[in-house]
Length: 87
Image (tube, rainbow, N blue to C red; front, side, top):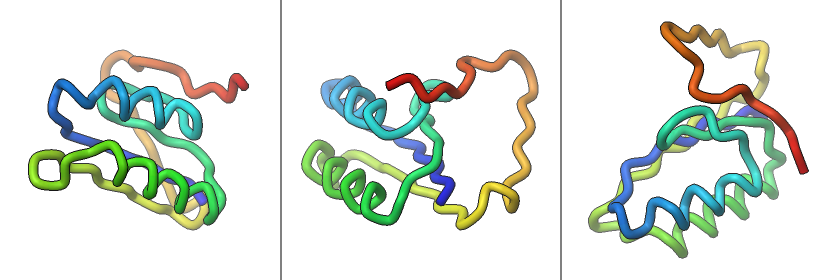
């Protein structure tokens, strides 16, 4: 499944969330990650995020698209980063 994660997190936790998400997804721009994940990887990502964030102050939105073909993506202006799958 194609996943887009956007977040608004307190400064003291931003780097932890960013480092965690880089294990699974491509960094696209500040506070935005995207890429292909399996159902089990999505579950691991949700669990990991829940362990890092403060649910009273932080916000994470996960968009799950069942097929990348259903997604049309346009960038206006410069691209902050090109998606890559470097392991």
